[in-house]
Image (tube, rainbow, N blue to C red; front, side):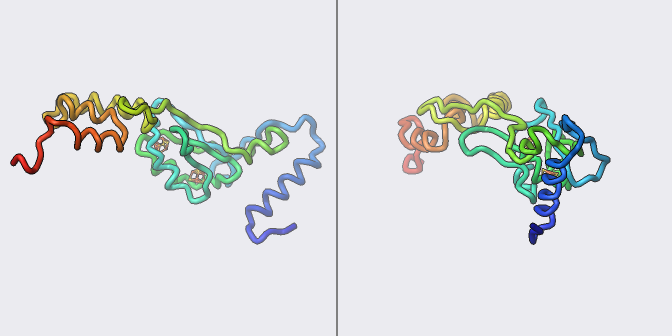
Length: 180
Ligand code: SF4
Ligand code: SF4
């Protein structure tokens, strides 16, 4: 059952060895030395801002998002421990954790799992979720004293992209180019 992709062949061999392993119960995880090509990621959820830069950096699709809500997902089987996500993370929130994870007869490492998730922000006009509560609240705090973001302009930051445009073009107090 040799595959064109070496990693897939290695996975098949691991599945076979796991099925034949004489030691029962099989340990949930085997720690591996640094620079091993299998492993997990440790995430500092207090530092992670859900910017998803690590998802874009991962060449193996081990990291992914969830289009429905702010979530960082991880499929351990795909991770080759290259460390690109670790050096890409602007918050220094990730660390490599080399191991061979054998939970659920090796099935768990093949399933995406949630590394971190946040509450989405709900648009104050239409209720549509966008961004994260943490990110929007942080932006509101930072811009509250800025002269360009007072009154309606600050309120607009709490709206989704669609409502922001509608509000901008229907607000009678907004300065129009024809008034200048
Ligand atoms: S270590 Fe490499 S393969 Fe693993 S999640 Fe990070 S970028 Fe992807
Ligand atoms: S782990 Fe780092 S790069 Fe990934 S979403 Fe969190 S802050 Fe962004």
